[in-house]
Structures are given as C-alpha cells and as structure tokens.
Length: 76
Image 1 (cartoon, rainbow, N blue to C red):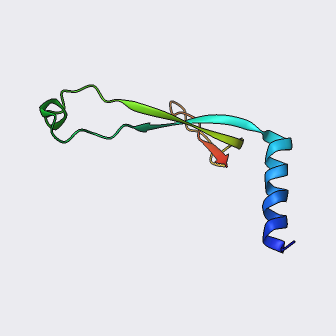
Image 2 (image 1 turned 90 degrees about the vertical axis):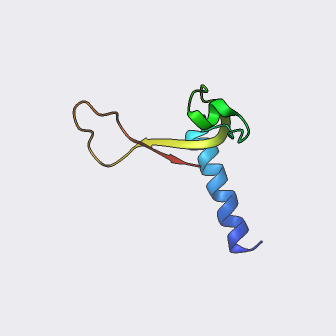
C-alpha cells in the first residue's frame, strides 16, 4: 500500500472511532430565475439539508464574546 492510502485509512479510522458524529449542512436551494417573487425578494427562501459523516466536532480556539454564538470547528 502507498503512504497516501495508509494515511487516508488511518484518518478515516480515527474519525470513526474518536468522534464518528453526523451533522447536517444547511444550504439555500437554487433560486428560480423566471419566478417574479424570487426576483422581488418576496418568496420565502427554501433550504436543503445535506448530511455529513463522519465528523469530529470541537470548539473553535477563539474565546466567545458575550452575546455572540460560540464557534465550532468540523473535521470531515
């Protein structure tokens, strides 16, 4: 086996055994160009949820300021 394949397998095993979590990535759905309500900004935006797994989740190094949401890092 090559070093690249070994490194890839080792990283996958570590992700699965140490933090094999699943997260949902929410992205906006594609806009319809011919829709007048989309062009005027009247339409309610639609979103798509895409599952990502395995994922290791950890808090970002920066300290959270009061009143702001905490930041997280994802290793996919």
